[in-house]
Length: 60
Image: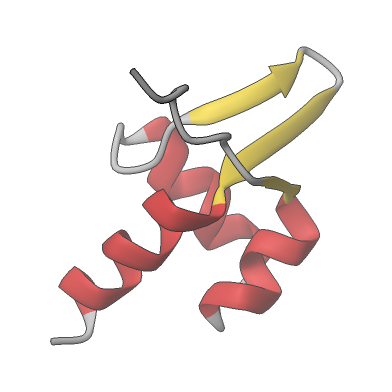
């Protein structure tokens, strides 16, 4: 049995850069449940693979 794939997370600013949207959009997607927020209370992070799938669904 192979180990679960490791989650690759990035902070809000890099998530926004990777998705081509503003940081506010990343935060809005997270607040609406479209994107899972990881990290500590003072440091939000987002999964790159999840972000990629979300962006692909928004821009088919």
